[in-house]
Length: 411
Image (cartoon, rainbow, N blue to C red; front, side):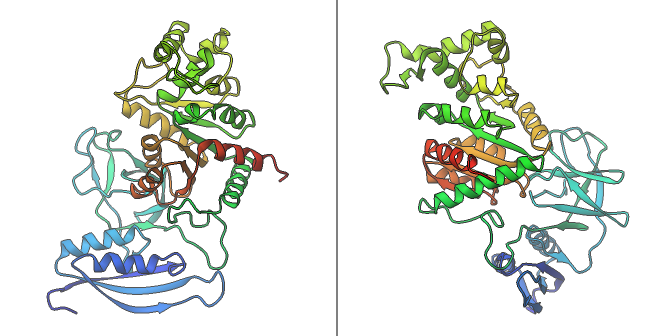
């Protein structure tokens, strides 16, 4: 041991730590810090499916540095050999955690409290852990109330990493991968369709997050078919997607450009605002459908097929439509409510900001697919923490068309 590294802690790793690259990630994290490591024991599973084991001593120059590195290693599933009890402190005020709160990942997590190991419900990154009686759950800083008991520090935290088992693995056994436009799209979309069918068969929910490019590219009818087929339970979008969808239903344009001819129409730039105004006069999207004013399109399909939608606004929005939630905290709460109701598959199409926002709310075990013609969108989603996302660099229309074909195949 370096004589300047007088503080140490032994950690353990269990599971498919080599196949899933957890062990090298752990060692890289230590090497990138001011700490050192010593591998005391490694046992590699000999048979396919056998777990492996490693015991590693982490050495640091200070208690603070040791606490910091062990806390970071826990995000990869490392556990201190001396797993203590989680510490709890009362929130000092509404909307603020104690200063030393534990910041969550989106991985399955548990806390040790009073000798019991409590699974953390509603797993989500960048939250705190609230303990109430024999339950623990993630809570956003905006939702915490004064006096609620919040986990602080890193003691008593158990994080379960996503693992890739040995041998040939299905597409979603370990979803994170290098972004490339040269992936075998047909087989990937076939696997996505299989995951969607399995989710529906087992009572899970499917979430679609979509941007206005779905309408601009003339792919709105394909999304309508996906909704009509019963493979969409929730739709998350901003103001633009429903506005341009409704504009196309009323006027045959999107942002004033004819969807049939691809040419801008005279005074067509007014159409989106006129569409918003008609919906506002009707009292909202559902009322416009009920009154026979809105008779086709994505939002019409959502209403007629009982697809729950959450429309979240931004400072850029015209109007907005009366169905759009304009408070961002209320938007997050509305999206969390749907996600926690059993979302198993999330399909994100042609929307960078909404994909990143929703990705931040998803547990790591939700099958997540990001489809965009721009590679940077897929990369940014993974870089912001949604490492479980499978990225497809392709036109959204081609994706939807191929997905519908695979969903129509016999199970």
